[in-house]
Length: 319
Image (cartoon, rainbow, N blue to C red; front, side, top):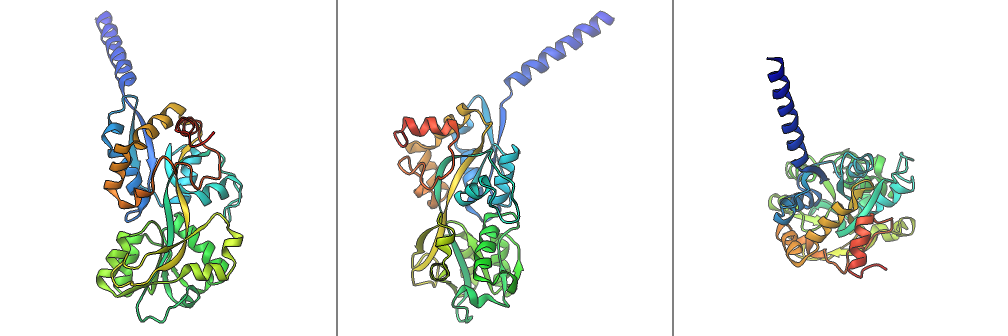
């Protein structure tokens, strides 16, 4: 009887080893909050069939608060991949994050995705003509831990109004709903346009966008934070906003933990940065029209992951 038990246990052990060896490795791709483009990136890569068909690993999208949380989770290895603003990768790597002097040196760039502009939504006729007019107002400032929140705090602190507003830390969709219920006077976003949350807000209110670009230029913001670029949200992007609205943006990057195998990074890039892969991304959100091989390393001012370096060298994008 003992011999049979030993044999049976041995068979179970062998089966377990066989099962584990054939199981796919789980790769976690950090996204963002509901209503934001970060989560669309993670979901789009997870659901792309050539990615799902990879034999060695499976990609699992995971929601998060946003850029700053993603930076920390990739650095710690809790996320293998994620979406982080280039400015946060730079500040984090150099120990320059606000109230956080830690150096996040395990986060490496993989690819440029798109430019994420600041957007500040108010009601038409509210009397709010510039960012400084928000003093004493109720403002949605993004999720705590998100890139939107961090960039809002940085910009509003620079303008001297961060401690003079009634701050409400919440995601974009929640902010749009609160705005529609007259619980907010304004809400801030740092995401690609058109934003679903702003579209939602425009369905229940006549909205306007504040000229953030003018406020930033006149206050010397670009001199202090030179990694930001300038752009305008075109007229007609949102219902009722019939003028171009100057703003500023940060580059949104796909990043990886330094310990993710180079072959994994290379294989994912090889699946996504094809004509078919890029078409799939655009089918998920038009924002991803900004993704291309020629702009693969645009806005990256920090080290590339070795797997990404190999890929972009083969494409002739870097030497």
